[in-house]
Image 1 (cartoon, helix red, strand yellow):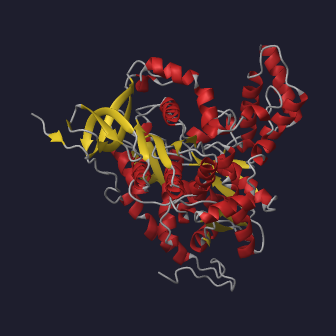
Image 2 (tube, each protein chain N blue to C red):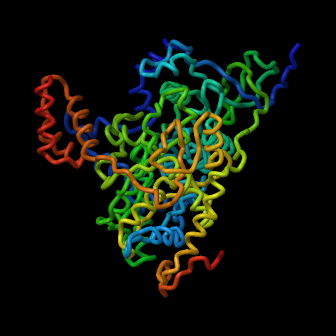
Image 3 (cartoon, rainbow over the protein chains, first blue to last red):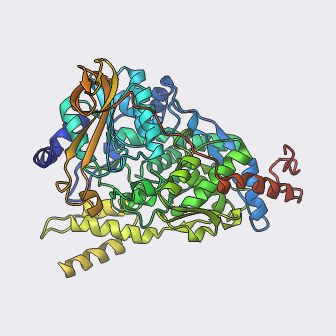
Length: 472
Length: 119
């Protein structure tokens, strides 16, 4: 260990990752900037039907779709006349380890076993670790989870402490780290030591595993209401959830459904700061992940990220910490469902968006997750208070991440703030064009790829390319 | 003389992965000033005292070494005390539903409000 070993391991990252994933990404390169995204996914051989069959064998998926009658009634009470869409929620907490992450883990672990790996490794502080540990236990594979878990004072983030417990309950070895992006180095070291499979969140398997969720939402909503959902809202962090869900909706024929990404606004809190680590009050589903990952998805432990949110997001909104805690309480108190926190980010957004839509419309919140010790508003708000953060009722516009958590004084104050997707598209395109080797221009294939990957029009791409040439 | 912990006991080991000042360049200054620490649990391979170098076999049988930090470390996370900021929300929103008197404020196909039926 130490700085020299850090440099050595990081310099070998390409070959370590290649050995641990068994996928040759070079085969899918089609130009200096472009790759064949469709073929990268299709070559795995998993379509929705095959994935569903694999998941059914390990008790993953087929979760209930629940209409939230009383939350809908509350939204209608606040909405203008004729407005107030029906709000439904996909109870993903019913999966074996308590979240939709079982869908991602099931396919990754299946693939690891098919390929003959003796174990799987996942770098995650969230539900995905528990999901991989749970699926590995069922498959008889060994499992290591690498977490960012505690600050320099040794204070564990309570939600991650619960994930540590869950992973250990499923028989995994858990490597708990203090704060910092060098977690990736520890993760690479573990891969090299063990030769295990990299159950990355960003492989094709991890994304294809979610398609069943989107397909179930489409089918169950139609069975329940007679139509496909008008809006599906997904809590958005690394991009996998929106990508897989949107692909599944399309595969099931729900091509007109609007896909909304919702994140908790954590503006102003630094993701790699030891001081800020226990002042976030949310471990995922926040803008600290979603904005950078939407702007540049390939910032991952693989050559290419199979989660490509800009291709699939029709609308991107944020809600405040206080609004999510408030709606978590409302879900328990009005619907008898103690769930969250993750899915309740999209629930808070759904509560506001339903009030924009006619009563005949339906809005589906596409996940819940289990709740319990550490993973609960009480645990987070008590920690926040201990860290000197103000917790109070009031105007959610006064919520300030890391300083003040303001739970709405009244549900009518719950709103969504729009994230400017046009701006994010331009950030993505600038970054992509900047990565071109000096003196080379994007090929026709590159331009078509960038248009598909960002959903920007050709004129915007060419404008940014000319802008870049002028400034070089 | 510190007590020695018996081999086979479930313990936690700690180690410093990167010392303060040798962190990755992109890390903010507050994080640069502290080491990157690693903790891992397992069954103690040979008797050792707290603070000594030790080795464990982890839950999946890997042998790892470090400094013995804790014996049978508890899961200390919980909920904490109830909070007034949350306690008031349930009664408030239930009262709002009781106020929804217009006949179609609820959800049922019959058009009748179910609001408050189960209060």
